[in-house]
Amino acid sequence: MSVLYENVFAVTWQQLVMWSIGGLLIYLAIKKKMEPTLLLPMGFGTLLVNLPDSGAKGVIDYLFAVGIEGNELMPLILFIGIGAMIDFEPLLVNPKLMIFGAAAQFGIFFTLCLATLFGFSLQDAASVAIIGAADGPTSIFVANTLKSQYTAAIMVAAYSYMALVPIVQPPIIKLCTTKKERLIRMDNSSKKVSRTTKILFPILVTLLVGLTASEAVALIGFLMFGNLIRECGVLDSLSETAQKVLANLVTIFLGITISARMTAEEFLRVETLLILGLGLIAFIFDTFGGIMLAKFMNLFLKKKINPMIGAAGISAFPMSARVVQQMGYEEDKQNFLIMHAAGVNVSGQIASVVAGGLILALVR
Amino acid sequence: MENLVMVLPVVGKGFLGVFIVTGIIIAGVMLLNRVAK
Image (cartoon, rainbow over all chains, first blue to last red; front, side):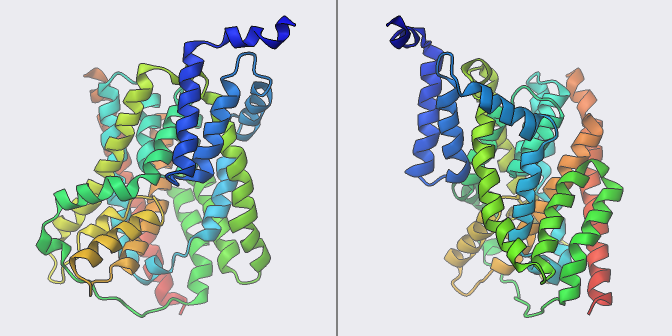
């Protein structure tokens, strides 16, 4: 009969703490609706792997070995779904907006410096810094390729801050801009791009990024493959499947698989708190970088840019664009920034992947 | 501090690289918009 109670006495205080963390993630997912697609499976998986002699650990470890550790399969397949969801037209109408997507990756590189000052190795610092990519698959891909020992903390930070963008960004935007700047109106173009452009765009980007940042080919290739399925016009059922069924299926597995690294031994470390802090700094300085470039450009431009759109270069799509639109609307009910912000936001998706690929090329 | 000295070239090349690749994509898309009407 001892088999019924021996595990009860085998529970450690560290496991109890992890149960609380798992419960917190589930609470945030359900009650606060914070990235529920990832936080709920991660939270529940945390419970599964922190039970004494957990029978679930084997299958979750297997999923991790096959889906993430071996070849980063799950995040790449998820990227097909994400690519199928993204409409790049706001960017194609005004491609120069992409420069703000690049500037908004500043937080990644700033955090990389900061993380090394805190004693992280170059590979771990780069893995922590990539939280600033504000993109789950990119963060998982880079952290795992660099064999970081902090994958779980990085994932929790990345997905939590992505969900907190509507809370994190507005104070930073207000701090970095003046009221006069926030009132700058931007013209909305009714230009459309041709279907040919939309079809050739994913192919062009894959080739250009593949030739200049080859480590990013897997990420950009799968993202653009998904986008091509969407835009080609002859694969509607595949596009719908990629956007809904495929994305949801992989998300279910990805969330619970990440929890393989949510054991007490791996998660309950001082470094976890540090990583959560550095992740927030990455998001803050991403926002800062995008805004500062816009302000700098305004020194030379006759037709000013509303610097808030720079903040939308963070890859948290579409929340960041909505935050900028909302803030612009609050200042001036006639100012519609959504198209510009959306263009910058989707460009941030591409720029974050490029940043990830370059980090891998330089650090690995 | 040695770590920072080691990481600065990585940061410089990485951030500059993002702008260079982005610039190439911008140029490519502008060309695409002209050609594929």
